[in-house]
Length: 117
Length: 112
Image: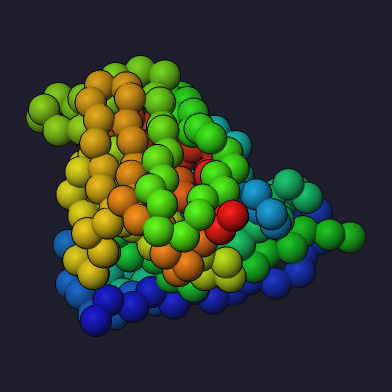
């Protein structure tokens, strides 16, 4: 069965960096695009970024463009989110999700990122 | 960016009664291939989101048939024919036609 397991969250000071990972299993990872979606405490869902199945294309939300980078390693079945210049409003649970037909069909359990001094 | 507007934001429903959530987009969600990439997600308390409906009206595997989606162009609806206790949670629409993908604000369904 499809499994997505995020890791790498934690507490980080404003202005610092953090890299999230999402390990995938149960499907042919190299055939699917992958998303990152976040949810601030008590708030709704915010789409963050997507990467094409082969890494050839990426898109970002305006709120993270220039600070976050999505990448993938198909040999490791893993997608990453490099987050630089972190701000307090980046505090959220970060989910990875599999892309399918303009959608996100499977989601991980999420990893919490807290940006605080 | 496409703005997705849900209503109502809070939805108290009596068990066994129907429920309906509206989602409107600020521009047409018809993609160049003719498809409409409008999705509905359920998020139960303390859980990750779960997709219920994709491409307006296609129910995901394992989703009870009391859930249905409809709509076209810019107006979409999620309907629950008879609300059960396990349906409590947040519901979000999301468009996947235009970059960036965008979500509605969410609708909180609770039992009256």
